[in-house]
Image (cartoon, rainbow, N blue to C red):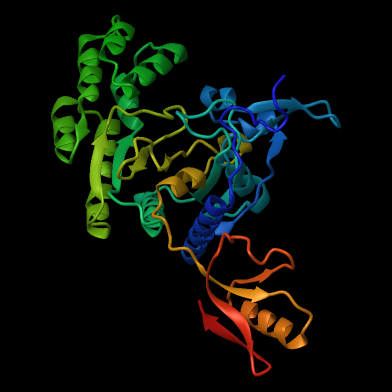
Length: 386
């Protein structure tokens, strides 16, 4: 019999110090998003499963907890990603004709962890609906990089890719959905043997192109290599041109960020429709932020709107963010003296943290760094440095 206080695997409490770090990051990211014109939405944690999974592919279905609604008898899902909900809000509740910028921050639940991470990420995300141009892609990438830089993440690297490359290579070929999914997974895992086996019956030129994709990762030279070695098709050329345009602007706007390309990384292939990106930090083997263009996400809600965005896990970000200095605080005695109580209230209203020591606990250690104390001098309560 397990102990009642043990939590499920990959589910954990967040204790005070880390919780404050996460909350500070949340406020910072929401304020930054607001300064860029993003509007905050708070979708529900659960909704009807068919709405929650619409247009998201098989992978999200496997990661979604499901339960039966005792009121309607319908199957509900606990959200594993907030983007489909944002698309639903854009399509049905806001229903605007022009550009809509939405941001959100809340928990999501996964049936299985990603790597060694939590099954309950705290997802922050930002989405732009209604603009098909690269300007929106760049705005989202700028916001994602600014968010990580504001958290003092060092050694930032942004890897760019594009879902249209594989589509361009395989265009017109008789390949079923299951085989395509396996090919995409093998490409993302850089599994050359699996790729060779899966495409054995395809034309030699296609096999050569897929083999080439496996080696297309590195700096900007990758784009020139791709132009030389991949088929000269409109979809492929458009993808490479878009990646070059984004690279030029990112280098100019974020000179301290390393730029890379991984053209065989097709993670989320069924989801993305164009450019996509992942951002890493120094010492992080797992992407701290991911995003890209997914123009099909709103189609199932009756509005096929251009869409681009990104998301990140604030819990993971807090683990890699620089440790902020501990906030100073004021130590004060507890008492009924009206002047004392007024002094404590005045300090708190001025933004100070004032820790009143309760009777009988005068010698206990405190979690806050109290560098001053409130003392009575000549019947006045004043601050004294400890």
